[in-house]
Image 1 (spheres, rainbow, N blue to C red):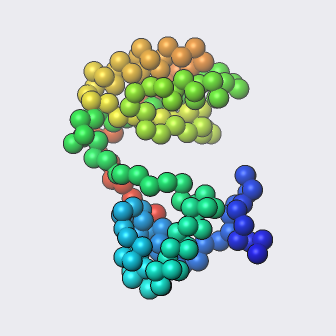
Image 2 (image 1 turned 120 degrees about the vertical axis):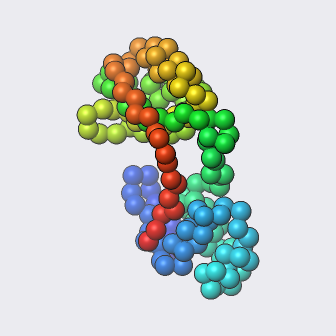
Image 3 (image 1 turned 90 degrees about the vertical axis):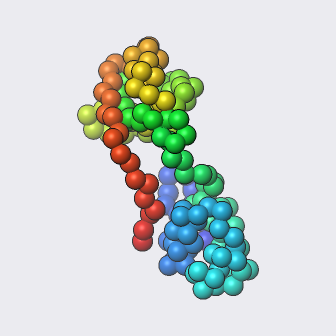
Length: 160
C-alpha cells in the first residue's frame, strides 16, 4: 500500500496507530526492552511486535537506539544552550565546524532572533567558557552568541 511506504524527504510519513505509538513510548523509556516484553506490554504477538519495530526502523521513524546519559554523573557537570547568529547562507559550513567541537550534543537550525541552537555538555564552567569564547566564537561565520546555563534538566518520553 502506498500509505505504508517510506515517506519522501520533506513529506510526512503515514499516520501511526495507537499500537505503534505505544511501542515507540516503550522503546523511548527502555531501548533495551526485549521483543517479548514489548509484545506483552502492548498486547500483540511477538511476531507482530517484531514486524512493527522493523517497519518503524525501515521507514526511518526509529532512527536508532541510544543510552540516556546523566551528564553530571558522567563528568559533564556544566550544560548550556548556546544561541548563535551566523552569516546568511553559511549554515552548512557552520554546522560542519560545530560538529567537531567537544561536548556538542545537539545542533539545530532555527527561526527567530537567532539562527542556531546548540546543546552542550562540558566538565565545568571553565571548559564551557573555553568552548564558547575560543572555539565557537572563532568560527568566522558566527556573528554573535548567547549562552544559557542549564541548572536542571529532565528527559521526557514523547506521549500520545
